[in-house]
Amino acid sequence: HGSSLAALVELAEARGYVLVETTLFNAFFVRMELYEQYLKEEVPDTTIEALHEIQMGTTIYQLYDGTIKLSGCKKLLWHRVPIKEENVQILPKEKRSFPFAPKLQKNAAVDETALRDVAVDMSSYCSSEDDTDKDSARAEC
Image 1 (tube, rainbow, N blue to C red):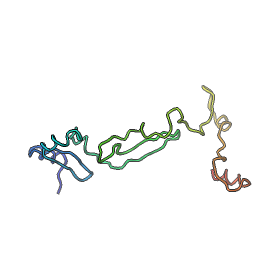
Image 2 (image 1 turned 180 degrees about the vertical axis):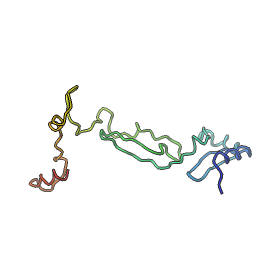
Image 3 (image 1 turned 135 degrees about the horizontal axis):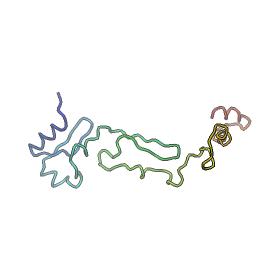
Image 4 (image 1 turned 90 degrees about the vertical axis):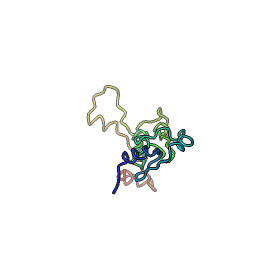
């Protein structure tokens, strides 16, 4: 049988304990006086919302323009330090763009023919051991 985290926090507080850490399945409490003396700076917010991260995995995605996006847990679990997307970017903002985007003039009407005319030939980005085999390299792309 189990109890909700909120019920455990309420019981612990009534007995002089404070929540200081959680994992997916565990909660850690210490005596209030020990918290005040040793942990208050380290764990300033002891609310369930601040401490209980039910999703422990962090997923990294890269967008077409090179922007790095994070999904899931956005903090170092055992250090309570946030992982900020702006701090994990590889490319500076001014260098982020999709290298194969069609180069259209501003306010130009877009039709299928115009898109084909400005499409980027990506065959040079495909590796082929032999330059005579460019057609198969294009087919791989």
